[in-house]
Length: 147
Image 1 (tube, rainbow, N blue to C red):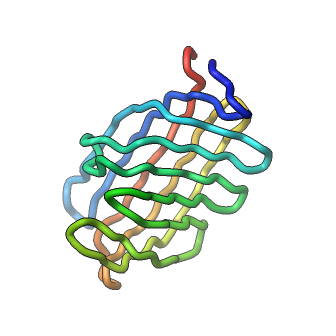
Image 2 (image 1 turned 120 degrees about the vertical axis):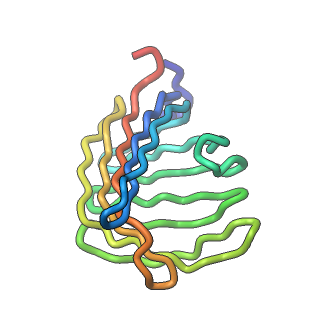
């Protein structure tokens, strides 16, 4: 494990399921390396996106708070999504191809993070220009390098 000013190198595993109504859901799983910092009660995670996610050239930062999770993207894609259980928020999603106003309606958040890493699960509905696009569920598992 490498430590630098309380920032650890970590291995991050993602699992997401996306679907809408009666359609067969799509599933995506991938892992990457990143950095993690925990200063109770806040955890911060950051990693570089890749072609696997379709967001190559984008850095994603995740801030895990006791009552919400904030996902910031900067680079090729820019956005700031705020997930708060039982709450809906809107954000501007900017890509090289244009911008769209999107929303997330967070159904549930489960988190168990500490100084060693942990897990976050979010279940939410996405809308674009006020029309429901998909129901998504994703989980992020954070482990120290070498575990």
